[in-house]
Length: 134
Image (cartoon, rainbow, N blue to C red; front, top):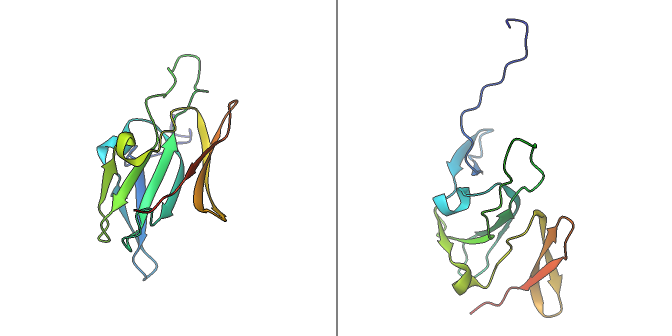
């Protein structure tokens, strides 16, 4: 066992890294609502136009090992940023963002109508959500 490869893990939480500007980064865990399933796509964008970066996240993981159940509890989430590194989950009924499938990635695209989020779902349809600022 002494010659075996060993790894150490400090957290399994989904986090974001803040660049401190001096070659170091600070690690911050996302809110609990974002921890219920693996995050496989994340977009940093000012969704509501308040001048603060928000996060759009989605994930799930259906293709786990045979002895591990799939992680399918996530529905995607808009995390509203306050400009000070804190994020508040916005429920799908308010945000209109619902991505409950086996998400493999997110992309932000510009269209003539504004910005849109594309959700890639493994073995399923592509989803598109238009961002409408209030």
